Amino acid sequence: MTADIIKQPSKIKIWLLQARTPFVTASIVPVLVGTSVGFAVTGSLNVVLFVLALAAIICLHLGANLTNEYFDHLSGNDRLNDNRNPFSGGSGLMLRGLTTPPAVLLTARVVLAAGAISGIAILLITKSAFILTIGLIGLFGGYFYTANPFRFGYRGAGEIVIAFLFGLLPVYGACFLQTGAVSTVALAPALIVSMLIFLIILINEFPDRRADAAVSKRTLVVLLGPGRAAKIYRAALAVSYIIAVTAAIVQPQIRLACLLYLLTIPLAAATLIYLKTDSLAGPDRYRANKFTVLLHLSAGLLMSVGFIITRTLN
Image 1 (cartoon, helix red, strand yellow):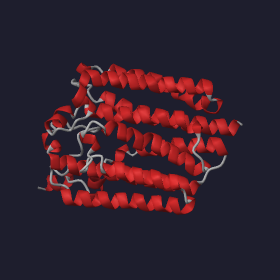
Image 2 (cartoon, rainbow, N blue to C red):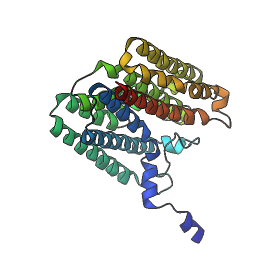
Image 3 (cartoon, helix red, strand yellow):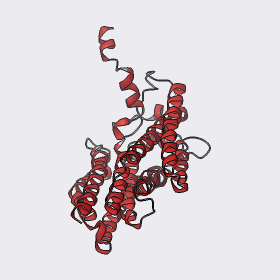
Image 4 (cartoon, rainbow, N blue to C red):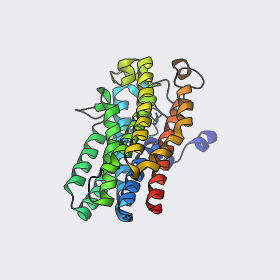
């Protein structure tokens, strides 16, 4: 009994795990990239709006994670998933009785409300219809990713929705907060970030495919099978580098940032080594997940540094 008490995680740790907080880099990267694009354009930084944007998207992300955990638990997905891992399959905390579905749903709504408050603060400062639209889309997409009646994640649209919510939308939103305008300079980096977060969602679906199929969660891996889904992964990754090279040629203002992104090619190559179907089922089956997360983070940091250096040198 004493050993059980010692092993029992703290309440704080339980809720940090329940909300999948180690993956908030998916929220931080697009805001960082968008803000650095804005800095490259204007040469100035509005720290208050930057912090509020981070708070809003992190709350949106954590709220979406919690609602995803809640509805996956209700659907039976968590119970059927015997391939849970650090990157996918949910926390499993409700199955272990460490949290309850009502508490998880309530916490999700509180966190989403906190994100909405941050968004309202941004709106009061900027008085921008563009920011209002972004905020409403973010709240809507984040909650209904797995919630009824839309359940985007269950209907073959989850990957695209997340790519938009954690790619184009926040990069352009963060850039707008710094520039007050919708800038074409942000397009290429926003598309690259969208591609990479799409890849994170896609690769994390491989271990879950049997449990997802059992509850009719129609992810791309379920719909297409692992082989075709792996081809989509490779194609999307290649497209991200094509975008970077093209943008570096035609847009001098973002050339350095795009060239720095190319430094991630060795990491991308390492990821592809573990993308083979047999690797995804073997002892190295989580390497591709890990490397994809690192690729997304590295790309965001490198591009942000590139934009900052570009502005500093000009």
